[in-house]
Image (cartoon, rainbow, N blue to C red; front, side):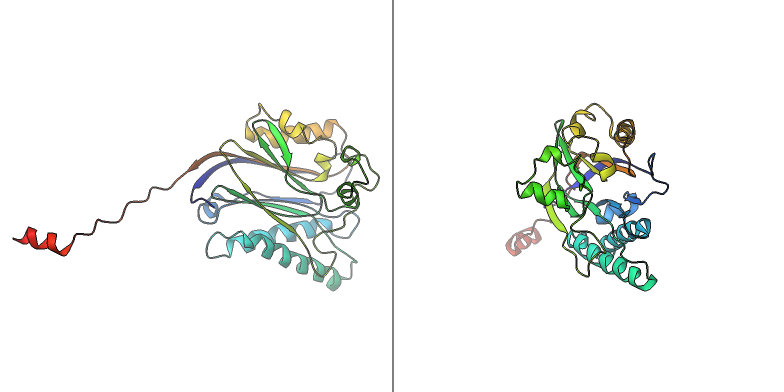
Length: 270
């Protein structure tokens, strides 16, 4: 991890969408004051509509991860795993305490420290990297359909239309223990990262996250993708966070004062 200070521009939007009455998605955008000391944190979570209180579960996950990041003495990517673990127990215990059955949520958290992107991910929200106009999905879906694709039982192009697309195999809160994916990715100036819930990516092809946003300023990307999802009649909550690495600057470090040998000191005295 290089000791550099990234300049980041970002945008984020979350809406209930045209079909759902409530919004069970939650998003987190960085606090500029905290980011200077702890790094840039972005997170998106999708409460599970089939379970109770999905909106509370998604907010718990977001709050737990951000709290873990900002409670560290120094920027530390291990906070992602810590925050997701804590969120899992909190959501799991809340469901038991309130007798509401199971609560659950996805979460995808992107933590930028220096020139490295650290991802903490569980569920089927996604993170895309757009580099030079080409998009790459950085996460895998923890769903029945995702498992079928990885086992080569289903073609990737059938994921978006499959009847079991949203059946999760892993999520925050549905089991006592949780297994998030933690990955690291090197960043370059100009890279864009897009986080989104399945209400967005289910109606937008992977390649389009690059082609549809190529000529847009980063502050317009979130709204543009939401509008595209609505045009294509998404039937779910829709949330997008987009951020761009606009610069990677290195701090100026003054060299230590040059040591003067004792003999040189003696000569000066003479």
